[in-house]
Image (cartoon, rainbow, N blue to C red; front, side, top):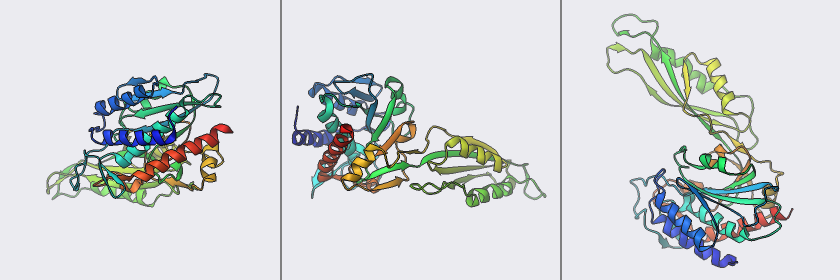
Length: 356
């Protein structure tokens, strides 16, 4: 078995190769091939569906619970503010620059190295499955959610996202609503008591003022924000409809169905959710994974950003090298030392968890 130092060097090289291989959501075919090659070089059997690749530990035992390790290899498109080539792995001042270096290539290669470290170990109390998933950035239908049917029931998961290797024990869910307020169209010169735009004002005010009662210890309150308004095409025509888009960040005290039902009961309009599956997630601080991290000096917090945790029903911990504030930024980078530390901490946390 390769030692940790060798695995770390190979993981950093893999990340450089991933950076230099475009992998926008739904277009990850070439990075999927790089990940396949990694498993082949490490003599690890793997499976693939679309651009998702997964593998099980060598001593997999159906009678044992299963731990999932997951991160994604798709990226957003680079923004126009880049001053460096986003598809060139550039190392300067201890930083590895490139699109996807921080979100979430560093996490992915660190988890892959960690998986290889545990791959051949015997008498583990848990099975370990790793999934290098696609379409995370777009919440696409062919991402981690599509792989779950091929996996055994999951007891818990570690989701690799940049958290500075702190313990994100909860993550807000997302519910996006399309709201249509209907009125009566007319000429603007005539009196109209059924103007869709005016009727939308109480709905907007409700979203601004309504407070969901349950406040999460880690994630705080549910947050609702009207982010788009669209109505009318001419100055002299009262429109028949006023359309709103509402972004709702859901805490772990509610599921998306409960939020939707509350909105429909209070807003006089058509309410249509874009999706219902991006639920909040959490893991108890008392869970062994979290306690293993705390014992190593890691702190817990609630994350406002969405990840593939949202498609899981098991307890899940978001944890990884890199900083979320760098994600989707120009000249994205990760510190090389963050990857070194990330692999070391992943191995130590899992070693402690798996010995209990």
